[in-house]
Image (cartoon, rainbow, N blue to C red; front, side, top):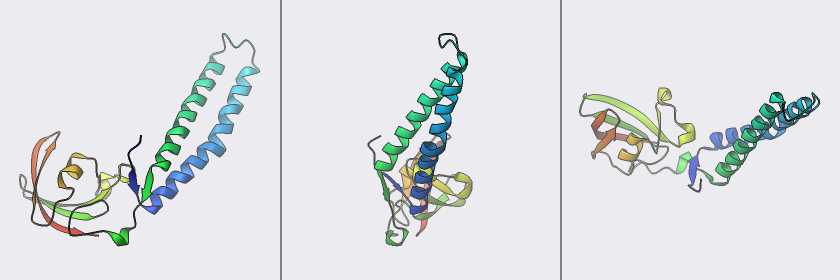
Amino acid sequence: MSDIQYVTKDTLEQMKVELQRMKAIDRPAASRAIAEAREKGDLKENAEYDSAKEAQGLLEARIALFESQLANTRVIDASNIDTSKVSILTKVTLNNLNTKKQVTYQIVSEKEADLKAGKISVTSPIGKGILGKKVGDMAEVQAPAGLIKFKIEKITA
């Protein structure tokens, strides 16, 4: 993953806490599980040992992924957001021209996306479709449900 990922300061802190937990708690636990399984005898036919080694490999892969993501993460300051156009961290009120319903979303990074909270990823079909648009612009979004037409009604920080 060489793509730069933009997140809020809170999300960056959560990522750091998760990485620290994996290194300080999960890694030693995986090592203990391997040691316990090793004590049970012949390693060639020890399913518990094989399972513990596999779990350790998966954990190490997750740690490496998190470290890579953190290296490519940049913090966005919410106070410096340009509200003249749709960008990451802006709140956008859209008028769905197909259903005549109005919705408001905040554009966030993939790590922060939560549709129930009204936060959509900048890489989602709607996020990509409205990125860079201004108030009054129309956006056509190809979603899994088909083509959706939106009008940008309001952009706030």
